Image 1: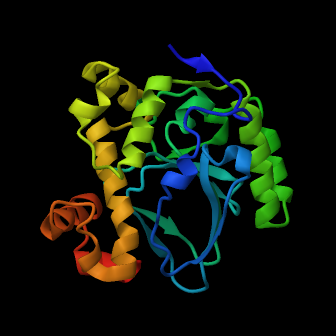
Image 2: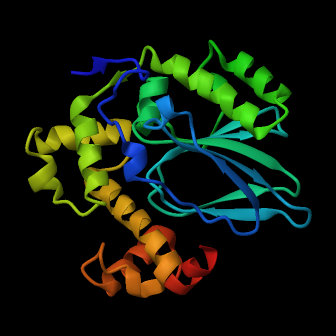
Length: 267
């Protein structure tokens, strides 16, 4: 049974921000990132802004990171792109000098905030009004008038904070997510996550709120945790999260479609 909370109080998923930080390639773009306010740190991974330099259009690589993004095109009437939780790579096409502002949400907060079954979103591009009619126009006007990235961030924080006051969360789902984050994705799904919940119910919750199975989500978390080691230490540092290096290399190909050396160049 879902429970009603205010995000300004201690939430069930507290300290998620200290357990997991998703990573995306940042090559060929001007990239900025801001942390959320402390009271929203378990809901929002971070705010980000991309500015496309002068030159040719860019097809920017997005890799699976275990989050869901709200992406605003600041040059096109604040078109909202909802980047659902990916299980394979995707490319976003950007034109020169385009500026994109986004907020990266930890799952399942997209579904919580917008009271949405994530499986019902079939298109990667949505109008903000399709998710939230009551405040959509106000948010669009405020963001269009915002002079800086910091002000844009504060506008979205206030909006999300307001949405959180009537938010419903699911304790069993959040407990499973926390176990996956804590274990860095190295967890026996059926054996360890299903102690307090039937496997069928767990899969149903993940399908509704996350969009993927618990096993798929854990695979993404484990992959993301290894990217930092890959960037810092090369391939010798990834064995701590995988059975062996070949296991990790197979995951690179299945989640990104890239060869390991190609991915390394993007980090």
